Structures are given as structure tokens and as C-alpha cells.
Length: 205
Ligand code: TYD
Image 1 (cartoon, rainbow, N blue to C red):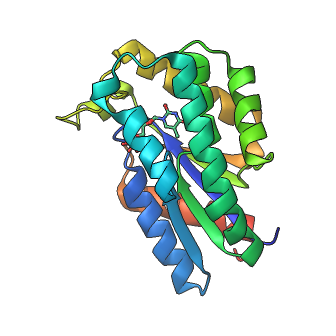
Image 2: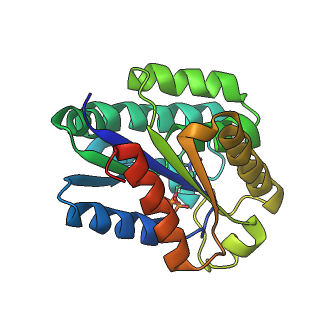
């Protein structure tokens, strides 16, 4: 595939969407075609699944059912949006992906990171990002930015601390495919670091 697949990961309130928007415009200014999308979601059916998994109405959702729903949404999203875009040669910028399942369902929910990773790899036909940008934030700071929380944001702080540790551990294992940035840094400095690393990855640096 000739495109380039970039994923943003991080805790709640890390400022992912601001940075995704900035990166998308910077790449478009350089003449690249960018597809911006998000998980869970990105297709009509996957957005329906999103509504179910994030709804406070289903507070007691079984953890295994939850993990399967995230994987199902991801399979649909990859098949209909991400893989076709990469085959056209586009840059895909996706808000969250497989590592979110590994961190939230695998580690924090205790379902096992290996199994959850395998499930998503199966669902997506083994599609992994070229680059993952982790906007790292202490969950106590990140969650303070929200007043109304969805079902997952309402989990205890300890859950979010496990999520944070999981992202950092995954990044440490494959440093050439991750960029970890402190989300409290200056917004412009973060954008510059992301663009520099992305341009290098794309070979347009
Ligand atoms: P969203 O409102 O998009 O959160 P954010 O702005 O922080 O990305 O909600 C997505 C929520 O779903 C978030 O709490 C993380 C969680 N999630 C999982 O638990 N597993 C997954 O595989 C994905 C993609 C998200």
C-alpha cells in the first residue's frame, strides 16, 4: 500500500483533535491528500456501534462484549475507509486505533493485552499504523477538562492510569513507530514536533 497511516493515541483531554487538525492542514498545504477519521466510528455502522459502547445507558456492558464491539467497529472501518484510502496513496489520520483496545480493554479491563491485540489484528487483516503519536497526560489533569463524562470517561482514575502506562509501554517497545509527547507542552511546540516526525516518516522532511 502506498499511503501512510498515522494514529493519535492518549488519555482523555490530551488535545488530540487540535493536533490532528493542525497536522492535516500542514500536510494538505504540502499537497498531500489527507483522510481524517476516528475510532470507534468512521462508517455509518461503526458509528452505530460507537453509540452503544459509549452510552451511559449500557453501564454494565459485559467487558468481552465491549471488546468485541470495538473490534467489530474497527474491522468495518478498516475495510471501508482506511484500507481503501491507503491503497489510493492518501495519508490517513485516525483518532485512536488498535492500541486503545489493548490499553483500555486489554490492560485496564484486564482481558489480556495479547488476546485483545490478536482480536483486532484478525478484524483488520493485520493492519498496523506506520506512526503512532501518543499525547501523554496525567489522567487527573486530562479528566479535569471534562464536565460531562461518557461511560468510559466515568471509570475510576486508576483505570485511566493503567491506560496511560499501557500506551507508554507499547511506545517503549517499538520506538521507531511511536512518538511520545508531553500533552502539557506548548501547543505550537507539540505541532512542530509532530510535523517534523511525520515529514521524516513520509520522506518529505
Ligand atoms: P471519545 O469521546 O472519542 O474519546 P477521546 O476524545 O478521548 O478519544 O471516546 C472514545 C472512548 O472509547 C475513549 O474513552 C477510549 C475508548 N476506547 C476504548 O476503550 N477502546 C477502543 O478500542 C477505542 C478505539 C476507544
